[in-house]
Length: 186
Ligand code: ADP
Ligand code: 5GP
Image (tube, rainbow, N blue to C red; front, side, top):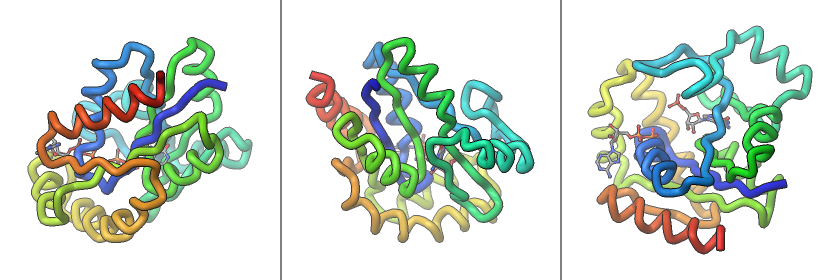
């Protein structure tokens, strides 16, 4: 078994932006491509950003026990980590980087213990979170409101993570996260 790093945050906190920067800094990092039952958004590609599955396909893979963990993150929309995806990355000797919802993050940490570090990316405020979600310009008003409504619950789970990093100034947040990772990989 190899190592893994787990990132969770309310949607819009800047987790994807931070993870993209870290993937450039750490050669051994490989992003765990999750499966989801939602439709691709913007420029997203199947097999790159997600494995996009129909609801039926997602459900049948759950029944075949193909997931390490999965969650219905938003009503009617499921996301999960396939066992085959973790094996694919570890077989190359790489460190797996996860971008999962808070419950997925807590579950992965529980499953992998000391081989994992879990990092919660915190927005400076809920108002700023809302600004970022709107500024991203990729989601409908309905989706934005669903995500903001969930943020309070997600923020209350930060204490279950190994580390919390506030993403106010992006570069500072990336530097702080890099230091946590360097210590873990030493
Ligand atoms: P998440 O993956 O957590 O949903 P994203 O990485 O997509 O969030 O970021 C949401 C939006 O906020 C994007 O438009 C991104 O460019 C912007 N953003 C990310 N970090 C910062 C920051 N530190 N300051 C201002 N805007 C940011
Ligand atoms: P988005 O639709 O913005 O890409 O992602 C919505 C949420 O689903 C984010 O909080 C993201 O971290 C989470 N997510 C993505 N993949 C997984 C996964 O494999 N498992 C779990 N539990 N959550 C995931």
